Amino acid sequence: MKKYVIGLDYGTDSVRAVLIDTENGSEITSSVSYYQRWKEGKFCNPSANNFRQHPSDHIEGLEKTISEVVRESGIPAEQIVSICIDTTGSSPLPVTNDGTALALVPGFEENPNAMMVLWKDHTAIREAEEINALARTWGGEDYTKYEGGIYSSEWFWAKILHISRADAEVKNAAYSWMEHCDYLTFLLSDHKDLATFKRSRCAAGHKAMWHESWDGLPSEEFLNRLDPSLGALRARLYRETYTSDEIAGYLNEEWAAKTGLTTKTIITVGTFDAHSGAVGARVEENTLIRIMGTSTCDIMVASQEAIGDTTVKGICGQVDGSVIPGLVGLEAGQSAFGDVLAWYKDILMWPVQQVMMHSESISDEQKTKLAEEMETGLIRKLTLEAEKIPLSDTVPIALDWVNGRRTPDADQELKAAISQLSLGTKAPHIFKALVNAICFGAKKIVDRFEDEGVKINKVIGIGGVARKSPFIMQTLANVLDMPIVVAASDQTPALGAAVYAAVSAGIYPTVQEASMKMGSGFEAEYQPKAEEVQHYRELMQQYQKLADFVEYNTQLKNNRKELQDS
Ligand SMILES: Nc1ncnc2c1ncn2[C@@H]1O[C@H](COP(=O)(O)OP(=O)(O)O)[C@@H](O)[C@H]1O
Ligand SMILES: O=C(CO)[C@@H](O)[C@@H](O)COP(=O)(O)O
Image 1 (tube, rainbow, N blue to C red):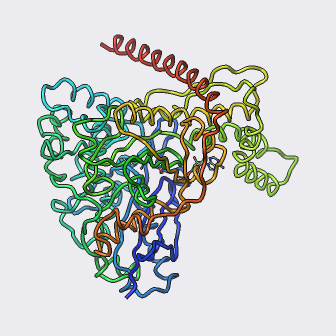
Image 2 (image 1 turned 30 degrees about the vertical axis):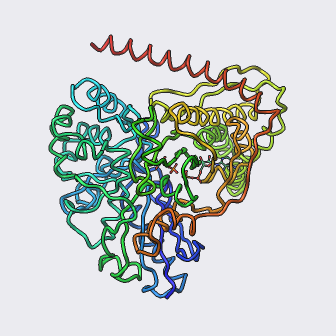
Image 3 (image 1 turned 135 degrees about the vertical axis):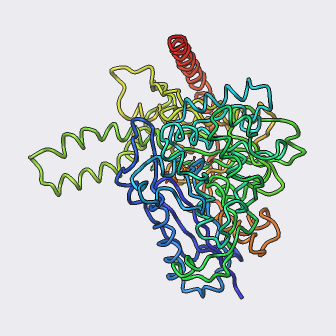
């Protein structure tokens, strides 16, 4: 009997499900669902970096996408043997003692603090600083050791601490907290005991400071010093964690009925999108996988022997088994990549929204049509024009920190800057400067890995930007001075989740073997152009100078503020 699996990928805006043939990884059907409330801008305040998502968006998407791929494929349910879910992270949400999302409990339906705190929510900057300061000074283990030495406001404990302080009602009503990937896996599973439910190693290790060497999560004493509610929460979280080749449970009756599948379907331990993306792109040692979309995640794997006692500074952690069981998974990334360009597009769209849309000289229909054309065509047009700018032209120097800096050395308070503007600077020049900036940010990550002894022989690009923008990929190859190949699949993270599902169902013995058999092929290769490499090296030095200047001044400003506050 031929066997099929389903991989689900919960991204920032939408969820995608793919139904995959386990023999060769080919996609039989796929389905996408956009988060409705999120699309309407509900429960968020972007100017305060506050991004929350209602779990109903995710649950509706779960039912729609799974049932659609099952129905459209026409494949008998018994042949669809396993499901695995990946999500963004760290994206935790509070739950009750039976694992119900707090936002689904009467009284909390409209409370953003009771919802999922999306990875890019930066409301917990202060709390992250507090965690870092305590970890360095409390006299016990520095729990940030395997998190690159700096805990980020994008992560689990900082977010929980922030919400607990901001909202006593949520603090008191939340029995526990779950990462998004664990919550959705729990929802599908028949294993309904929160205490023994198999939580993701990937999520726990990279974002919650879980490590075998200190018996799991940070100690109660450490957490108590941050806030007694965190100390109390520890016992209601988990001690063990599990890699995504393991079975978390079987599809429960409610969800079997909703999706058209059977209760024999395996539910695999959940994981993060970037890590499953790496598996979908056939990750191996000394290969850097860059998932280039709104943000980037940079994933590598290394054997215990190769990594030894090294703790790579300033990255988002190194976790045994977070990508491939038996290998250490390393994660870094940029808090904004495509988002830098999306931000610029939004700036340019301002007169369209605020002037043209209110104009009385054209019809509503024409206005809407024009606005849509601009919205969808602007980045493409800017790309075409930026490509024509000769290397000899001066372009501004920009920083990529519009959403802070994730790595190297997380600092979400840093802001972007653009320098060397003149009256001759046109929109495509700024666009080109921003493209350069996101590539220089990438180079800083590559340099950090190599400086810390993690050798990179190959770069694989996946995600929206890798596939949509040959201009960015060529610039990146020039800046890194390395060839880059691009994975052909549109759905590499979902495909990676399907790979995990196939292993947990026993179809392949290891994730490595399944990844090589089922993983995506490659569609394009970018070689560095020798004559341009030197040019970008010089620009990179100017980027570095601007970065140092902005970072120094941000620190100065923060020190002054601390002095004033004390
Ligand atoms: N032609 C393009 N060139 C460069 N960037 C693009 C282009 N089209 C879209 N983008 C960027 O791609 C990003 C979305 O990437 P995608 O991988 O589709 O989403 P996600 O990160 O949510 O999974 C957006 O930030 C957008 O600005
Ligand atoms: O940070 C992680 C994983 O650790 C990602 O989930 C986060 O960057 C979101 O990725 P996307 O931009 O949605 O692809």
